[in-house]
Image (cartoon, rainbow, N blue to C red; front, side, top):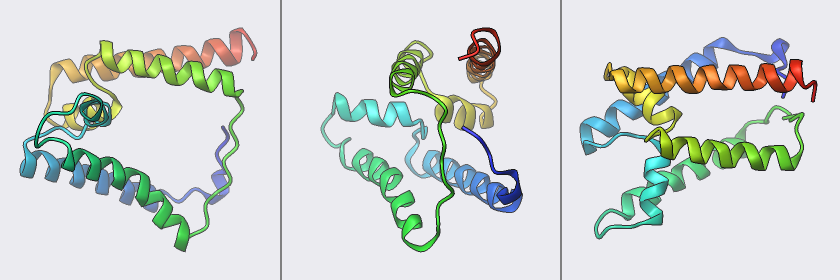
Length: 144
């Protein structure tokens, strides 16, 4: 994937980060739950009575928001320099990692770090370091 730095707008990126932070804070304050996407989605795979509606609404919002945005604004062209097989393997590894790490980037990185959770700090450092090492290995050592 490449970034068109000429079209990069730090103010919209900052606004998006602020909105994510506000949404995560409101979610924990109003619902007492962490806005970790893997946990929200995982709860739909093993549903409990009275616990499905908010999860469906949450996931529905994640799907609907970019579609609504695309109706009014043009999207930048995305170019992904990986095969479908590599994307499939990467997605499966991320899924396995979220199970072993008891959470995902949103749960640990956004919600956990904001709560000063030591466990989330270790998890976030681990998945960031693993991501950096993987990109270095794939791009520079294996030259794929």
